[in-house]
Image (cartoon, rainbow, N blue to C red; front, side, top):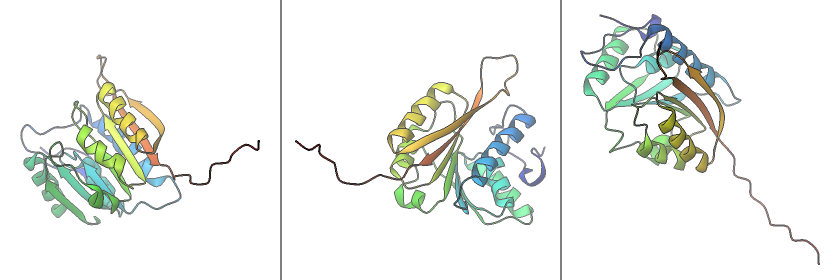
Length: 200
């Protein structure tokens, strides 16, 4: 069966990852779009990492943004590609099956992007986040279902020069202690200058 609403409607393969609820997915997508629409610089090209069957990628592309999507599950990339080809009015989407734990996007690939959104499994995105922290990507949106790995990945980004602007909890796991988080990070400009010495 098809899942999603509007431009993000797609047919995932059996066993593919889906958000716990349709309302939860809609809320997460709205928070990602909100982050992309903020700031002075226009976000034109986005990397959607750990993209699954593409709810973020399809919605971003429907908003005239080019998207490069990557996920380790080939069947999910196939579902995304089919939804993209069956739709109309999308900006360009490129998609690849890629194990981002073992082969994360590297500096030159990341530096070509205006923003990155990543939504990894509970283990987080440690290897990929290290590469993002070293990059020049202006905007990073982290979606996480584990507060512990989110905190670890956030610390890596902050150490790499990003500022955490906000974290929004999304309670889509009814009657449980689990929570989804959406964090928005922006790269900070480096301050350079001479060291001033006190007069003796």
